[in-house]
Image (cartoon, rainbow, N blue to C red; front, side):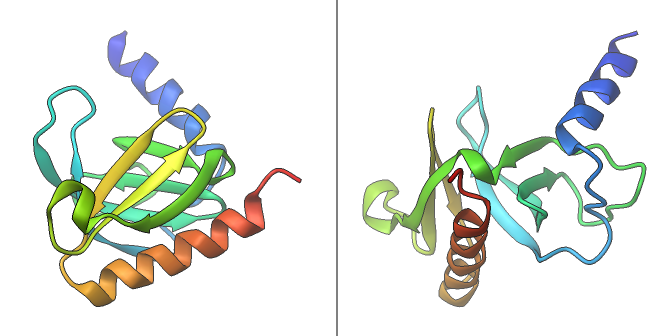
Length: 126
């Protein structure tokens, strides 16, 4: 029963986005856990105004995201190396929280900031 409830919640958050097919951006990032604040490597996908993350990069139609961020809730994205003292770090601010991510390289960090920044502009509430 709990598995069915988790699947229904995931489907509601996914909202019909075919995240496994032609993402706007995809790649590995480090992210802090929501409750236990250890850094974990996750596969992230940006598509149709949402950022999804998974434990693996083998993502298909039956994959269930570990989490989803709705871009329309995002206010800003910017570098955060000085804030969390990690190279290639950036922060994403929503109306209710600030999340930190770490890319493998400076180039990947800039590509994520640019891609998400463009998506924020496209999906911002007008």
